[in-house]
Amino acid sequence: MKKSRAGIVQWAMFDLMRWVAAVWVLVGAVGTSGAEFPQPASKKGLQVQMVDDALALGVKHAAININLTGLVDVHRQSGNPAWTSGGQIYHFQKSYLESLDRQIKPLSDRGIVVYLIVLSYASGRPEVDKLALHPNYATNAPNRLGAFNTVTPEGRAWYAACLEFLAHRWSGTNQAHGRVAGYIIGNEVTSHWWWCNMGPVSMEKFTAYYEDTVRLFHAAIRRQAPWPRVYLSLDHHWNIRYAAGDDQQAFAGRPFLEAFAARARQRGDFDWHLAYHPYPENLFEPRFWLDKTAVPHPDTPRITFKNLHVLTEFMRQPAMRYRGTPRRIILSEQGFHTPKGPEGELLQAAAYCYAYQIVERNDGIDAFILHRHVDHAHEGGLLLGLWRNRPGSVAEPYQKKRIYECFRLADTPQWREAFDFALPIIGLKNWNEIPRHP
Image (cartoon, rainbow, N blue to C red):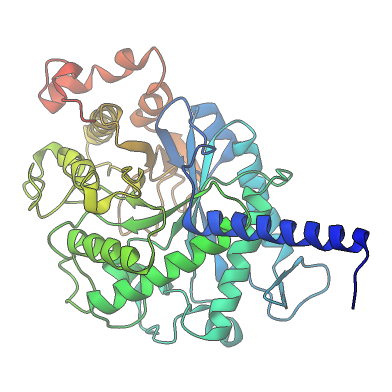
């Protein structure tokens, strides 16, 4: 059938628009230079519990947990927002979304870079867990944290829709709900039995699963916004695995990163980045400068603040780069315990001061996000907060610790006045003894 001239022009315009849309999706899928990623004034960050206090502290980066099993609405209740993906309609819990809005928006409105730590907890609801948790999730897993079900068609479709929806809400052009700049996929996956459970599994099989999952999430996010970053999450074990687990429950970070990078290149590289947790070797000993298993060479058992430059040097290798450019690193969760006794708060504060100055002198690190805001009663006895919790409560703020003022002033002109007490504790004469790293 013949077309009129106007019809030909209309079809040509349609084809052009379709081509432009295809190119846009392709750019989103493979990544961009990240030119739109915000560049805050400092690296100071916090896993935020109290938004108003975080603003008073002057944080520049904030990490917030999001539990995707708490987001799904499999019953399609009236009033819950819907999202169409792949020809299917998905529904999400309005009340949970609004609770996250109340955290995200006041932070991002003040220019704070917000990262979501994307998790899926076992919910105890069979219809939700079957959809969201990996089919091999072990019901006796500690912490109830499951690997994402990105292996069944239903699970893959739901997770793609979910990440599209989140990116549209918080990373798209409409900032009515706040702005999210980074998505951290899972938690400490090198110790997967505890933090990203898919049952007993070899490093090779877990790497294949996780690379595919991160790729799926990355593509879904980039279909809605071309600039947010997507991060892998690793603990401080570098050339050893977590000692409490066997080789089917945990593995070392370095070989995992090498295997992940190699698999990503084989399948078509994309711009993933790294969220690392350089806790001290002993979580109950804040004096990380005493760490014996953190040594300054690539074969180090652990990477802590003592030898943080080993990580940034490793990530600058050609095999770890994306299109010739080093991937970005954030320290998304780490803190310092407050030992019992009169010197406990002093040691915790000194450790923070030293760590902050190490990070400040390492250009390969974008953010130092402290964990926690308030001591938590269910954290195995660790007291990591800027605040003490009220006796008998889980995490109700009660009393500021010595570290609080150090944190508040860390990126201000008064930082030396707040930090210099730590020099004799650490064993330094001045802060310039800390080397700089590109």
